[in-house]
Length: 151
Image (tube, rainbow, N blue to C red; front, side, top):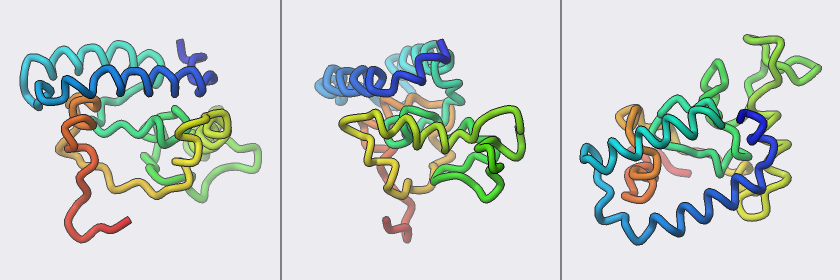
């Protein structure tokens, strides 16, 4: 299933459709409830297989070329570090390509969110770890930025 990442336009369409379908139910999507446990399970199974999801609870796949930046060994959330090799591989895991170079390539194929890779992502909120990214997105918890941080 990891090969699915190389179809960012399809994944973007699935994301768009899912967002559209779930939006009317956002009032019932609260942290800590039965609904969240279902979503966490669902996300762990499907996003885990496709994106190697680490359950950060603040998913930015659509803003990073349908590539999870949390799979970067350095957890770089806003682009590659200075250690990308000349071949485009990761300095920490030399046999793998840099997550952010993959994100850049994949974002070029995305019609709706492709340009989102150019923006700066807010700092990740650690207290959302292990929660449902969908619930956090639809409830607004994922979009809240720390006091004093401005984009």
